[in-house]
Amino acid sequence: MAQDLLIYLEDKYRSSGQARLAALVGLSLGRARDFGDWLAGLDQETMAPQERALLMSDLQTTLDSMSGARGFACT
Image 1 (tube, rainbow, N blue to C red):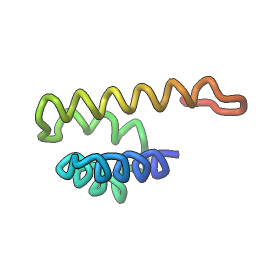
Image 2: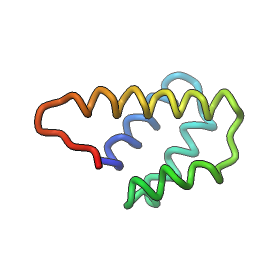
Image 3: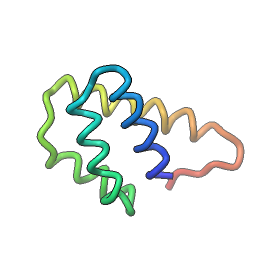
């Protein structure tokens, strides 16, 4: 699930002109085997405040929408 989410976000950011954020997410693709660890590691990433806010908002929106889907469990 983490890989699919990161692929989606990387494409979204690249398409919307957020090249730095797309690059950060793209680099995470190989390191995001454990989604919880990846999320915790975001605190150590260097991002502009608006980039961090956008990423956090997108993660929350995506995970909220997925948690309401039948057959999906986010632990």
